[in-house]
Length: 235
Image (cartoon, rainbow, N blue to C red):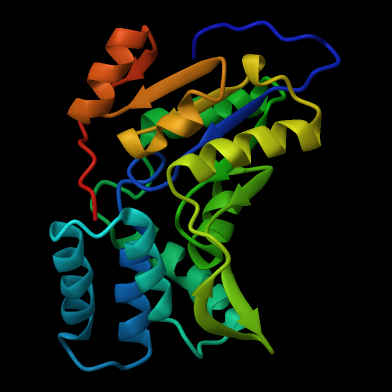
């Protein structure tokens, strides 16, 4: 981790995207597959549902709308049940995923931030079922994701707003103001051009992986790169 200076009275924050930045997977889809199987859904249900989302993405449907359509799949599901399933999902992923779930280069970076006394804040389009156990696993101070609407303990299928693109930058600004941090002292990690608003919000952006678009932008801007041999895959 490259050096940085901070004022003694100004805490620093390491903001980190999650899917294909911190973990080598798309958490929303890995969790959905696990959850459907645990619920006893017929074979092929996951492929059908995700196939519809991928077809929409190929047709040019915006990422924010794809995100909303994903959460509609959970209409009527218990928030507590999803949270408990998320803990089981992460345990299953860590036990069975070849090569492990977490990207070691980024995990080491976050450990370095924690050792330096920095806060670690996860920022993702994923949701609490995935983010809460991941946050506990890496010692995150906070974890912000897309917030499903919950009524009487059940998800309605709608969301307050998808935490994608520009929304990530707004979260960084709001979190820094809340915690009294100077964004110029803060670091952010992202793997895809959709993370640009998060990365440009801080003084120390880090482009993770080998996404061609983000790599080209990082090189033009003189940002630090953290090669991992992984390329962002999209939906």
